[in-house]
Length: 360
Image (cartoon, rainbow, N blue to C red; front, side, top):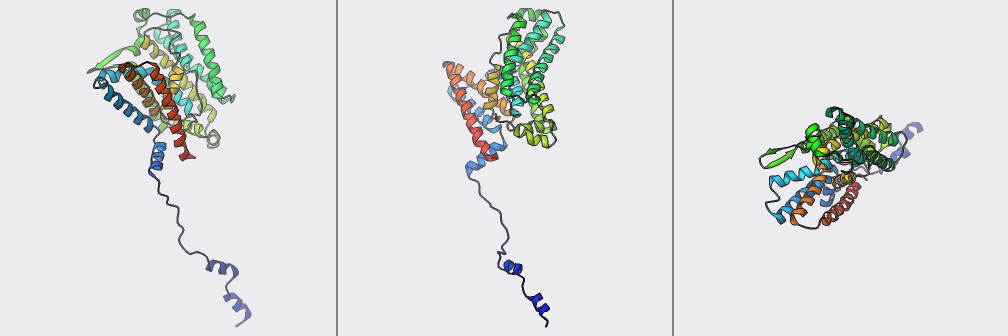
């Protein structure tokens, strides 16, 4: 036997290391989630669950306190009528907040659009249908301005919309000369402006066309956000705009489209506002921006963007409506409504932070 053949049969140094290594099959950590962790993951994957649970609990609570009167068809539909405009403006706010922005000008855009619809009809003599289209054009223009300043100028959405809120609000008062167009004049000369205030009955339930419009709008936006490429891009931008850009998403274009659509929805809210109050008033709907943010936050939509469901916003608006009607029927001081809603907002943000730990 030669020395070469003996060296060939002798184990090499790396083979000695392998012979002493662990031969067990690799296994992964199978950590069993605790009940709290399971709840946390469920709420993370179903963002509308929390506001839905709170809504059902609120209805049950006031039902126990007030009795069958609260569960009547009239009371339930009255809640829908009261939150119709908040739901519409909340839908516009939802689109913006999903992109990690915020729009403080939604209420002012809504009112300006309604004023344009009324003034173009009664001051300039335009056909009411054409005046309504002009109102939608104004809403889209305001949204486009916000979108350009946020996307191309890279200005913070809070600062941009705080500024445009003041500009639009001042334009509203200057243009209208703070004059209200009476409901009687609208009813006789341009009844289409009051269309969304008209109601119809289904048994004892009374619905307005504004309620129908709100439900249809939320349903359409839910489908778009969950089943179209544009909707996925909105969520992607809110989650991480840089990653979305690298993935081929045209971030600036999507942001502008979000703000323009938000402006159009606000104009729809302006049309509904005329139907709700019957007249065209430049001082109406001044708190719509705060009410829309309230509905969004209570509805479980993250203010950090990228997470939430527009159905949650609708549930959030309904929660506010339930508290308002329930406390009114009990006969409590209206300030209790604001106290409880403020508490719900803080709790909703705290729950959102807790749920976000799953993603972290």
